[in-house]
Image 1 (tube, rainbow, N blue to C red):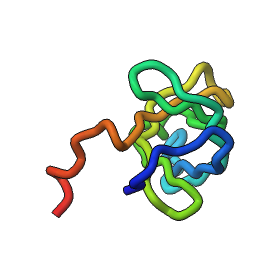
Image 2: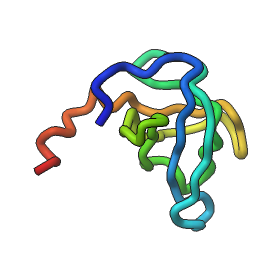
Image 3: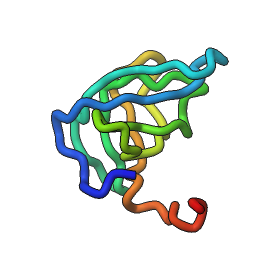
Image 4: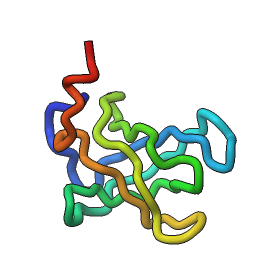
Length: 91
């Protein structure tokens, strides 16, 4: 898990299963930060990819992908991992 907050302009990678195509990787950039601790990204997040990890260039998880604005859109979002209580799930 990332120990620092990501920066606008930072390269990111999302793994998901868009339309049932498991383990698909998309690359993008952090475009901004929005309310409710959401990270705005331009990596494509299609139906089936939400809930997957969002990684930085070091391979650290920085977020969990959640949604996008339309099919095939480059306006997508992830929840910042630092605001989630993930520690109780890691052994």
